[in-house]
Image (tube, rainbow, N blue to C red; front, side, top):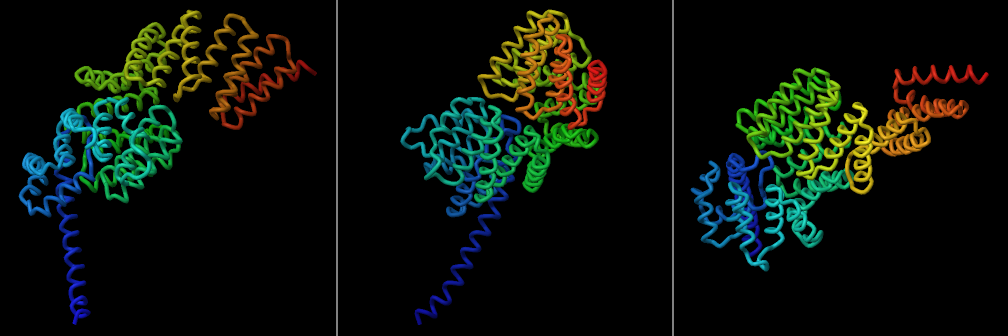
Length: 490
């Protein structure tokens, strides 16, 4: 009789569990979409916790608060906030409050006794600090959270934000490794929004590292997930990043298409800072195509947007684009002033690579105006900082220009030494076309010094690099020099 009873009860119990799971998943999807429609204080860098939302839905179903669930599915949080406050459920209450006000979320978390700050609460605090640009505070918490004996969700968020910090420091290898780990953990936790954001981050990392195929795969995956969630800000970000990738691939037609699609979504959502960032990308797109008037139009549009906002990165990026426009049009006097202004902007936002790019542009402007002392001073700063701090600046560029300064001063021995250092750096960074130019300069110095045999060998080294990477114009120049030297030596 007992076996018969168990035989009847087990299927009923399994059916009940299945029903509860279906019910929970159904309400979770409704509430997720409702919460994603809540207006958050900072553009796409939105705060979210699938872990908290899952607990909220389970708790409301358990307590039969269906009316509150429907309110949440419409993006209304007040009744849920009251419920969890009365239940003394701090993590759910603070999550709901933080959706609309990041600073309030930080204040609520900081007001809790330190002993009650679980790793789940601390990772939320770290995220809120990151989104409000309190990076040092966020990183301090992340470093404190252990790698073991924590939930998969906490571990995933830790990896996600550590990947951001590695990206800022130019550590692409660790950034990609951490982002891939975060994506896998988020997927296991069914944290679809965080998974999509992580694919977007991975796509950005691989794009910057010039691993184009993997970047395209990650960004496309992010777009698909954002579309499935009906999360338009995320879709706009993914499209914008795909536009950047196609710009890098020199597929300008597709790049423009993606940018315009992203721009349309951002304008519809009134995400004006995101609009400004797309204006900047369109300005860059036209700049690389040497359509300078079109580029200038979008630079000015972006500057108008960021003049009214506190988006320091967007403002700085628009200004560095203007610096490059002045460089391309050889407006050296204005470039010197613009580069100085822009490097001050990048110094404030602690972006070392762009800061050094601006210093390098200022050095070029000074060099072209024959202010060699100032140009050398700028380059010394660039080289010193590049050698002692992690960044993405190509130090070979600075050494090359410094070599040209000494060449212009007819200090041939120092020029040769500097070009050799430049060539060494270019080879380390696998920029072999640039290395070919350095060896060509060294060969010209050897020619001036009367060392024709050494000059011939160095020109041949330069030609081997130039030919291998289809630098036809440089290859033709080098071949003519080699033929001339061979005739002289015969």
